[in-house]
Amino acid sequence: MPAMTILSTTAVPDHVRGALTRWMIEPTPGLYVGTLSARVRDELWAIVAASVGPGAAVLVHPEANEQGFALRTAGDRRRTPVDFDGLALIAFRPQDEETPPSRPSGTISPGRRR
Image: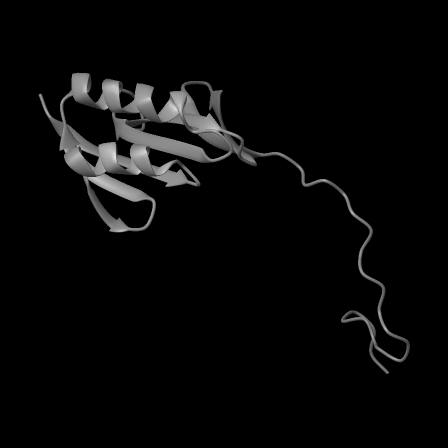
């Protein structure tokens, strides 16, 4: 039975975007929404996951679980879904620590008042 499916992509090749727009609408760049059967959804996801390259993709579709939906991800993202007692939660990977930019002399940090 067809069900609403949402797919979000970043930096995917043009041929993948073309394949997605055959089955879904693109209301904003990189966001695809459509009513798909499970077979079509799985075939499209296989295409996206295989060719995501340096980009990333997230698929959300209905599922018979506590939340009523399932998440699939492909590519490198800071946010990763984690199963916690049957619930999908999002874990944030820490950013690479860089040295903070130095402040010009004479500036006041936000926490300090004169």
